[in-house]
Image (spheres, one colour):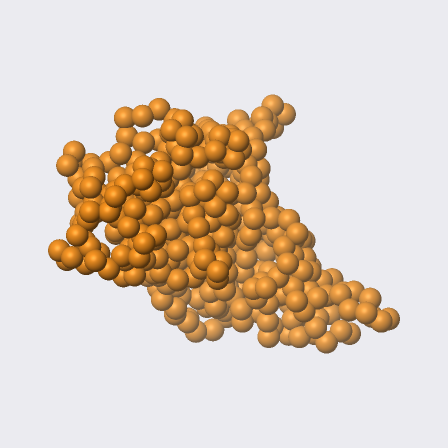
Length: 420
């Protein structure tokens, strides 16, 4: 009997159910999309998504999203701030002259100071035509306004630990939105103004149009704040090694019931996991977890363990079954379902495994260990929609870890028809 199978079925790896997934949000793809459009720039160290943005960087991004890069570069610098590098002066001059930003003092802008989620929310809202003067938002409530207008998705943007990663995701999302009093998206406007190359923008314009249709098709989920789903995993994991041993496959069977209350910020899950392997007695484990008051509590046959979760992590946990935020999507396609009891089928491909589904990956990480550093070959979500609700979704994850563990499990979830 292989040591790995003996180890797993003995339950040593199953303790992973009591820890949060190590998966983290990474919006490198959003940064690459913005870079392709000429709106996001890195440094000699790359995109540096794991650090906080600076006030100078935020000023440059706002000018680009306003389509005013060339105009700013042509301006003479007359603003009163004496602490700006040469490359920062055109952007700050444009914003200062237009009344879109103020300095930290009469003579200091503090361009290397940290740009907060609040500050960047105000910048993006202004890029979309919303202003304090018109009463569209107040600076004090800029974050909540950004969420209301769809610029900040709580399941994407971590407002408490705001990084360039969040800047990339929020800026990319803003491009897909319609500016106040306009027709078309912000990206459409930038193309029309000649600020973004039309050829480079074409595929994103098509994606944004399809995504808008997807959000309209699944709009019923936004009002469904309290609901239940039932899920099961199909497939298993295996371990490849050389020599006479060949490979061994460990199958997983799950029964899972989850209840979400997005309004109250709570989630409950009851789970049964059964592991099967040749020559080994089946092992069944019952697990429970619940989220309330910003604390995740888990139990695996014994006492409860507790782990605090951030507001962003909580939002992702509560959004795991629902419309997928744009910043996670690599590709999205719609198919009609004439032969099935659904109105439409949406197939979504991902560039990397979204943190959105970290909690749902518990059977895989419980048997295969952490998926950090794993190579993913296919990441796909299929959602069947009827009456503007996602009735079923199937998540396929094909992976190979650095330890030679592989798998292609499929998580199938179904909306409880009694959910209101």
